[in-house]
Length: 441
Image (cartoon, rainbow, N blue to C red):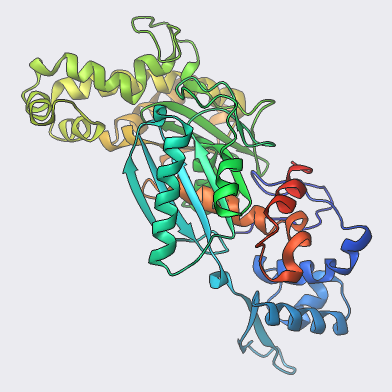
C-alpha cells in the first residue's frame, strides 16, 4: 500500500508526509522523471504502456524518462508482462535496494534502530536498553553508533534519509522537541540538525506513538485504510491517530499525550510533577513500582526482584501467565484505568480500529480484554458498529517500521524528488530536500 500522492490534486500526501505541490518554473523539466519514478515505485504502473495512462505523458517522453531512471539506478528492467492479446511489454521495477534509510525509535528506557530499503521495508535492526533522561547528545551518540554498525554490517556507506521517533511532543514542521514531560534536557532541541550534521542526510522527527500508528496502519494486519487509534502502554502511555489517511499532530505536536489525561486516582505523583495523571496509576513505570512494593505478597515477584534488584515488565507478564494473583490484580487495575480513557477517546474520535501496543502487552491479554469489555459497555452503538480492537501485529517493531516508512515516503515525495532525482541519489542535497519538505507540511 502506497502512502504517497505525487502532485495530488488535493495537495495532501500520506500520513506524516509533507503536503505536495505541482511543479513550476525550472522544476517543470524534472517533473516527467518524477512522475515516472513515482508511478513505478507506487505500483500504479508496471510497464511503459501503463505509464502512458498513469502519467499522461507521451510515448516518447515515457521511453526517455524510463531509460534515464534506469541509467540513474532507480529503475530496472524485469520479465515480460503477461500478454493481453498484443505485443508483450516488459515490466519495469523500482530498485528498492539501491539505497537504504535509517530509522530509530526511542522510548523512555530503550531504543531500537533499523535499516530499511527505499520502500521502507525493514532489513535489519538492533536494540539497546537506554534511559532517555541521559540527555540528547549522549542518547544520539548511541543511536549514531547503532546506525553506523548496521551500515557496516550491510556494507553501505550512508543512509539516503533518516527518521526518528521520540517519547514526547515534537513540532513536526521543524523537528523540535517541545516541553517533553519525561525528557530533561531535550526541550527546544532539534535532533534532525544533529543527525543531519553527522550523516548529511535529510531527517524527519516525530512522536514515537505516531510512528507506531503509521507502521501498523501501513503494514499491520487487515487495517484496510480504516481510521486508526493506536494506544501505547509501555513505560509511559500515549496515543497516535490516523484519520482520513493522515496523522493527527495537533497545533504544537502534542496530540495524543494521553498519559497526562486526568483520572480520579491521585495517589501517586506523575513524572511530570502533577497528580491525577493516567500514566501515574497505569503506566509501566507505575506498575513496576506497585509490583515492587507488593513483592512480599508474591513469591514469584519476590524471587525475580531478589535476582536482579528490580523488576521489569517481562517479570510481571510472566507472573500473570503463571497465575500470580498480585501481578494479575495490578495489571487488571492498570488495564481498567487505560480502558476508561480509551472508551472516551473512541466515543470522541470514532475510529475503525483500535490497536494496543507497548511493553505492558507482554503481560498477556489482560489489557486487550479489559479495553474490549469497557469500550463495549460505555461506547455508543454507532461507534461500536464497525469497530475492531486488537493488539499490535508487528512483533513490537511497528514503531521502527513506521519510522522507516516516514523516511522513505518523505524522501520520495514529489517536493523532495524534484530536488534530487536527476542526480540519482539525494547525497549532497540534505538541506535543500529538508527545506522543500518543510515548506509543505
